[in-house]
Length: 159
Image 1 (cartoon, rainbow, N blue to C red):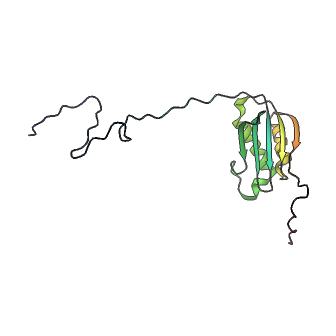
Image 2: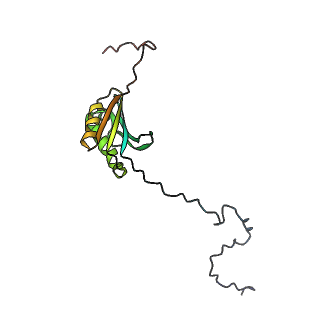
Image 3: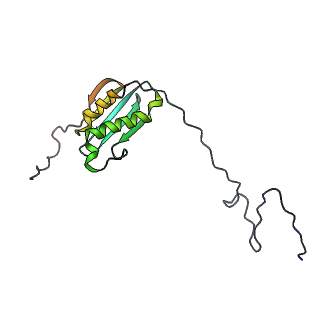
């Protein structure tokens, strides 16, 4: 029989095993550290915003922002499950707009100014899908970068 009889403890006390030293207070092994808890995000309510459409030859990206440019929601063809050359199709642009509208429907967006950049096939399809989703389009502006005779253009492809 052992000399010392220990009573069961009711509070969950952590004791080191025989031969081990006690951990110092405040070390990571003690359960005294607590994680910081952040507050919940405020819900935005925006009635008028901006729709930025970036249509390249390989992809289409749609971003909805408020008037200050703070992003409310975005989507792209790759995010919606399209792969390879299907990402640049007008059908994919319509699906992208439906996806981003679905994400931001609780914001209360009613009308948008549309800013289009790029020369891809999803340009007009994305604008039509925005109008078809029930948003009022206030204005459409083309922001496609056009060179003013910068560096020499690459030689044309021979196919």
